[in-house]
Length: 215
Image (cartoon, rainbow, N blue to C red; front, side):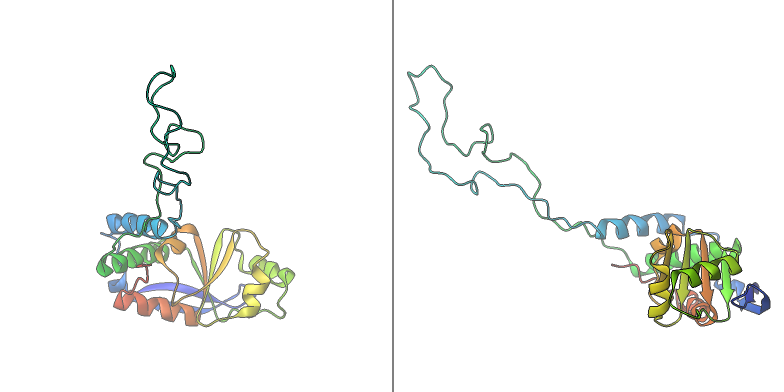
């Protein structure tokens, strides 16, 4: 069993949280993590870049001038990509950048990243993440008590609007639900702070391997 120290909001040890080592994956999954990150970042692209083809540029089919006798190069239409205000040759068109990611690969990537956090002791477990007031000052004081510094990801078991409101002005800090946090977010933050309910959710996700990274 891997043991993580549990502390209260003042940073004083108050117990331990046990994770079955059989659930940790440290000997495989590097490629799965890489492909999961690529797929996640690709899915964030809007894919809305668009240029006009010659059939979409406004104008008539009339030749700008006659074919011969003017001394100028032949021109067939004003929508030509060679002309200012004309079409764009081989320009970008709206497209979907999303990549298909097998569910088993997403699950393996999630287990690998979370397992590394556990093995490296980069998870701070708190009895309960509760602030006396939804103020940035209270949140910064909480971080000081827990001896954590940005960048850090706070994980909670259930929605906490007060915690989100208190943390949103602190650079390098994010608050996420343990049930929906994905592999990319875990990788972006070297330190995790999670309450006991969030850790129970993460342990359950380790057990069933649900990565939630298909989007």
